[in-house]
Image 1 (cartoon, rainbow, N blue to C red):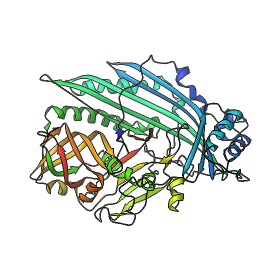
Image 2: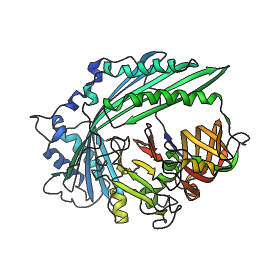
Image 3: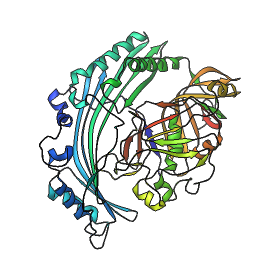
Image 4: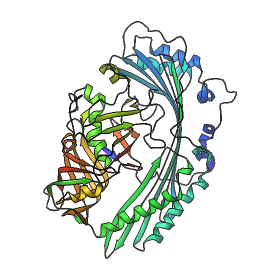
Length: 512
């Protein structure tokens, strides 16, 4: 496998003029009921009927596929950027399309189109069906609409109902507050995005499910200058929420964290290089758990014998007090889902329980291979992509220790609080992560702030070397986006304060 990256929420938006409300609210129909429009649910307004779905699935199964499904999506996204005190960037994107998948064994055929006419859907289905060769397979006699239960991301006012004029004060207000917070601030960038997406999934077994999926993110970065030196840092939040998500407390936190994370860099020094204990701070340090450990537990990598965990089910992979979860049920979280992108129920999956690897993250194909039920981890970037096993919200459960106890246990080491990016070799789990903020630990106390530090290691070995876990779990609210095989999906992550007995630190004095 080639290297891959996990990218945090950026502060750049596409260049362009501020667009008029008429264009930015193209998704107005998202907020309106289908009414008398004939057809199925929300997509009835686009001419989607049960007959259209049945005819498309019949074409998909015409060459002997084991299974077929259709994924309809209508998505309206807006983003705005502020720089030099003015909102000078805006971007609006509208997607409407459908993907048709045919599965034969562990092979997948796929076709997609932006044209929802019967002829175009049939052509996409026939393209997908080419993966198989055999007699046509029957469909279920009736389609059943499956309930999602209570939504994990309820909204009172949908983003497509809110005009840009009501969103822009977030940008201008944060800009003014950051400049007022510290005279050393010289430049501020603010980024705001919102999205309304509706999906409809139907398959050859007769299952049908529809889901409305909101998303929003808000972040800022600032550049400060003091004594001829410049430093830059930022902070962001994201949620499957509505306007109410941006409470005063959350807006205060965005300003406070962005400014403090920037200003502390003026006092920070490069860390000493070498092998040493590393304490990972609660929250954003979950990037290491996600990247270096979580991906190795996705079933497709194990089914293909790529992951180091491919023969570890039922075996100890960590200390008995280490428990790792991946779930889609955290209400409002960026990685939350009502159903996955195959229409499967989403729940809470214990990956590591009392130090033992208990299962992998499964989509329908891998679940069939391992003869288990799907775990609700079949995810795709859009209708143009096939689903595959992906994480949702991945975190470590609280442990038996205290944060202060963990720090006091370290004679000389690092305390890492804020990561900006990372890379990992998925098969072996080798990783490198860039630490944006942290502190030296000397004689059991936090001392000098540090910067420009890389930590380098192997995910499975680091998991084995976690020897203390605190009781202060934090699910990070950042706008994390995970990339895999060319697809990007929103995720959440979290971790309590943990101690790793030894990690390679690349800092001052490091070679190469």
